[in-house]
Length: 165
Image 1 (tube, rainbow, N blue to C red):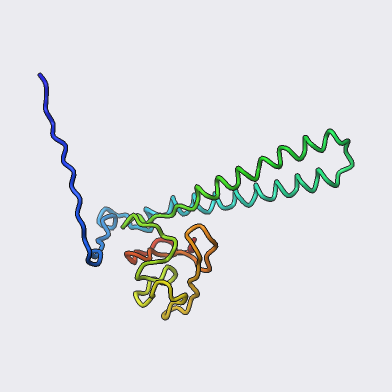
Image 2 (cartoon, rainbow, N blue to C red):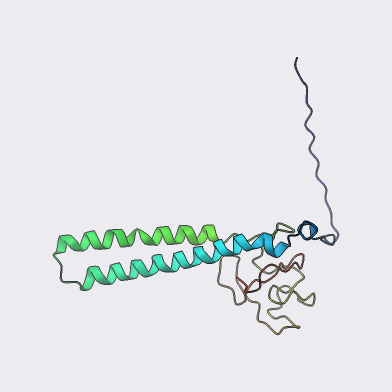
């Protein structure tokens, strides 16, 4: 017996503000903070790994230059340490993807209506400062360095992490 199936594709364009988000995890005993916790742990671990790799590169480079070893051995010290740089860069770029478990939008850069540090609705994207907490919210791009810790989603206002990322 052959079974027919029909695929349907739908898309909707909504020019208005996003709807109010309901914490679906909260009803099952989980909150968005609990849903985001494994990602926050992985983000912190990957950041530490990148720092260790960069320190390993620096120590290998210093060791290759300053240790009293034959010239042929310097290459065997410098080459493995030089491979740590591309590995650190790769881990760093893979680690940049932070998404909100509620609205699935990127947490950086802070372009939403809510302050990423305190969650206040008084934040204006691009202003560089939150009026409520007085925090400096500055960054060039999503990949660049930021001057704030992400504790909540700037798009839907959901609280995600106490320590901040």
